Amino acid sequence: MNEMGIWSLFLAIFALIETIKQGLLRNPMIKFLSEPEYVNNRNKIQSASLITNMLFSAIVIVLLIFGRPICTNWLKTPELFPLFQWGILIILILIPFNHFEVLLQAHFKFKDIFYGYLCRQGIFLFLIIGLLIFHKSSLTLVNLVRLQIVSLLWGTLILMYFARKYFYSKIDTDKKTMLRMFHFGKYIFGTNVFSAFGRSADQFISAGLISSDVVAYYNVVSRINNMMDVPSIAIADVLFPKNVEAMATSGTDKVRYYFERMVGTIVSILVPISILIFSIPHLFIKILAGSKYYAAVPILQTVILFSFLRPFSYQFGTTMDAIGKPRVNFWVNLLTMSLSYFFMYLGLRYIGWMGAAYGTVVSAIISFLVMYTVLNKTIGVRLGETFKYVWVSYREIYVHIRKFIGKKDESVRV
Image (cartoon, rainbow, N blue to C red; front, side):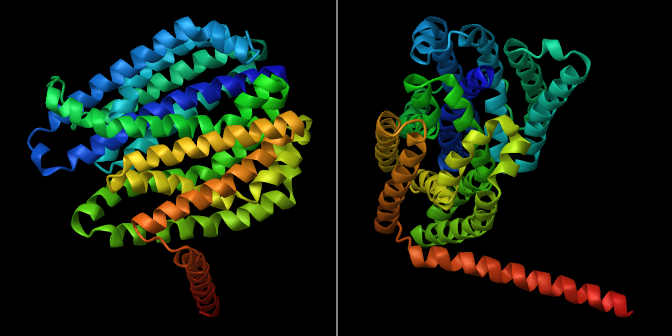
């Protein structure tokens, strides 16, 4: 149980680092590559992004080297120390991996990105299975980090293969371009810091206030939430360049339509899944972590019914950035992160280990109300229209099922 908690914290910290950097690189590159003045000078955008990537990675490595004692003491997990040492290699390999990924995303090559992540995660999974079968005693936390390094390296090679036709090997530094991208990206960088810290708040606070054992329970729930967030993240990645384009050609009306339609579609998927997980939580926890983590059941049931609010958060950020309001996104995310930590701290302090779950629900509801108010005032998003598309999605599914059954009946009669 203790090792599971330590591994969960390591993954949360490095996922946080990658998420923050992705936001810093992705949105500015896509935004500026779409501007007419850079049509013939795209290498300036790529170069500025790559330099930012390397500088950010260098800062993270310095923090890992000198900040490890503070971090491990605060989280009460000295076992993280050797994992951070190997984690420096992960940060270095992420430099080309993230650069190639953003390049492909800017050119709408999502299938190629899928292959890169499939290789990265697939090789990691097969290596773990191999150790479990042939040398189980070698499956230590340090070796898990080493396996991550190997799989990340292979994923980078796959992305490099697909992105090679878009990559300029010569760096073209342009101070004006770098400053413009920095001023646009600084709010997005802050936004991603707050957003990433907010999503991991339950694990960080429970580690600091209680123990790494409790972190393991919250990590199991976090993994289920992460799986449910996949549609939101995927659509947010696709929708950002579309929103940038829509804002330039059609204004906020098209952006509002994209938001309402996409959020409504995602919610239509999440509602039945949430009800299913709430009804049989033991099954999902057993599949993902094993029966010894059944203590996480009340946490899962508390937070899962409010998972339909999460798509609003993901689409809010990409929408604000796309319409040129990263500063608004920055302040809203600072507020929502602060609410998360405040209510989770109160919950853990005065209720106990379940307190972070109650804090998550309260902060999610308040954050949703804040984001909806901002969206309504900026692009005119209507809650009624958003939920209308939930029913539209169900109706379309029903029509497709009827057609499928009808075709099947006709083939049987023939």
